[in-house]
Image: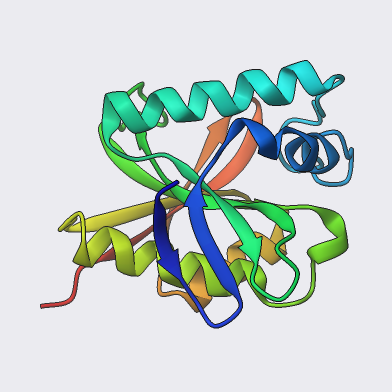
Length: 174
């Protein structure tokens, strides 16, 4: 099992098949999917397939979302990480998207900001990226706030699946 980053309270490691129950808890919750197209997963089999899809991204792209584990309990609390976007979104492609998602019972604890900062640092220091992108529904004020706290700036607003989204960006400082 590969650990990509560690913070004061979190371990960010590769997603594993045994994370399926935690993924299902998170992705089966309609509130978690409120700003993600309102399509919560309906079965643990979907969560298992999602994990396999992400694990294939590790092989194909050298990066993908990581399991976020709470150090104090060992609980799977969600995921965070970079994803190489190869298909055009808002006429952009071949960029690294910073993303995170957590089970509702772990909201409001600062985990998203802590994880996003570690992901940002990994992208700049380990992957030597020049920029990192973030995309958030304009109504998802919590996610926008997290991205801004770790340094991303609002660049533009665009239509994504019929919903207005912010395109946000941070560039590597020299």
